[in-house]
Length: 335
Image (tube, rainbow, N blue to C red; front, side, top):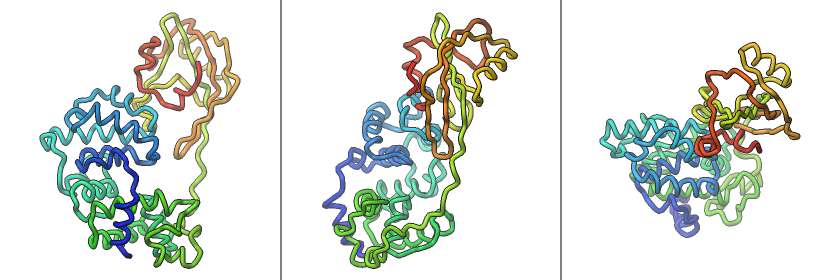
C-alpha cells in the first residue's frame, strides 16, 4: 500500500469536523463513542453541545444519569452512554480524572473495545494501534481482494493484523483517520468514487471491476418483530410513563406498553392487576420503529385512569415530560 499517497490525500481532502479540532484523548473518546452506528451529520450537533456541557472527564463523571441520558436522547444505542458514564467515574476514581495513556489501561474501560482503543491510541497518542471499523474493512477488502466473510470474527482478526502492519509504517494519527475518511467519502458501500481514490492503482477490486463484490458479508438473520399495545394514560395531573429496566433502552422512559395485538386482552390483564382504564381514542396509524435486531409495531390508544396504578408507572406533568430521557420510538408518537 502507498501509505504516503493515502496520507497526503487525507491532509488535502478531509472534512473539517469539530471533533478533529482536538487531539485530546477525552475528545477522541467521546466522538468515537457517538459515531458508533451513527452518521457524522447526526453526531456533530450532539458532540458540540456535549463538549460544552461536559468539557472534561470530571464533569462527565459527576453528571446525573437521567440528565446525561436526556442530553444524548435521539442518538440511540443508549448502552454506549451508560458505559461511557461508568468509564468516566472509573477514570475519576482510579486515574484522578486524567485519561489513561496506555492501550492496556484504555481497553479495560467499560464500553471500550479493540477498535475504540486503537482509535484513541493512534489519534490522540500517536501510537501505532490498528482501528478496524466497517469503513476500514471495506477499504482493505477491496484493496486486497479479500473474499473471506467479514461477519466471521477470525477473518476480521486477520484483516486487523494486516491493518496493524500498515499503521506501523505510517503516521498513526493521519493513517487511522485517512482510512476512515476514505471509506466514508470515496470507498463507499455504493456509488464509489474509485477514479479519485489514492489507492486505485493497486486496488484489486478496482483493477478487476469487482468493487461491488467486496467486502463479502453473509446475510444477517431477519429482525425479530414485536407487536405492542401502547397506552397514553392520562389523569388530572399528567401522563403515566414507565422507566425501562430491560437492556434495550435501559433507563429511558416510555409509555406503558404490552406485547399484544388486542386492546381488550390488555385491558383484561390490567383489570386483573387492579387497574381500570377508560379507553377513549385509538390513533389512526400503527407506529413502527426499527432497531438493529428488532422492529416494534405499536397500536396506540389514549385512555383515562379510572382507578388503580401499577408500581412501575410514574405520573409526569408537561414540564417533567420534556425533561425526561425518552425512547425515540415513543417520543415520536403524537399525543
